[in-house]
Length: 200
Image 1 (spheres, rainbow, N blue to C red):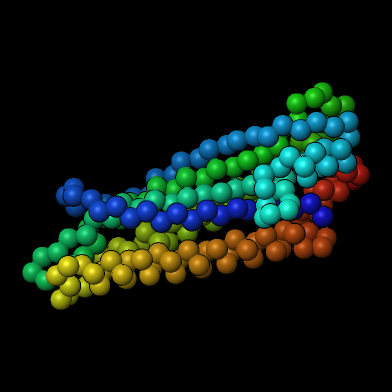
Image 2 (cartoon, rainbow, N blue to C red):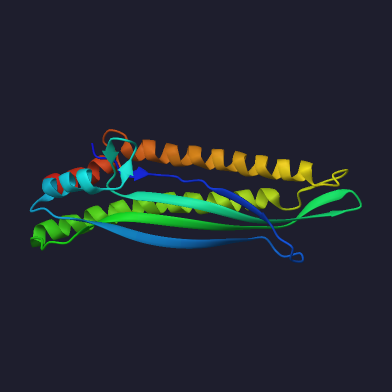
């Protein structure tokens, strides 16, 4: 079975702000890239994706890929010994990589390819939605975070990093669980591959 894979790149960048209090916010940027393949039938296209698709581990290539990074701008304020999070703004960058057939296709192969790619995009966009939910949940967990007797904000910063890491772990588990269902025998991925290779 040829996998449709997720590659998660979790970069946590925490930059202190000096601005006045602001509402927490999540900014989402989406990028889409392609790699080019060719083939006269479905099996040839699948073979090309196996050779040319984005790397998934050391030895395999994926049909498509979703990757994402998260950068945080954090403003913490200390007053009279109490430290609180005044603002937690995240920038989520989601990058999708899909195959693109550069050669003409027969009407039947084009029809099957379009159905195949609709399923691939749906799969990858689910990964993107889970990533957005993850960042929203992390941002929510930071709101109203404060510690008394924390003049240098060390307790607050340590708790902030802990909450972000816990939220990431929770949603990464959901990403993995989603892939396990999709890649199970008789699952959606197997159906997409069969659609393209056999025309079912």
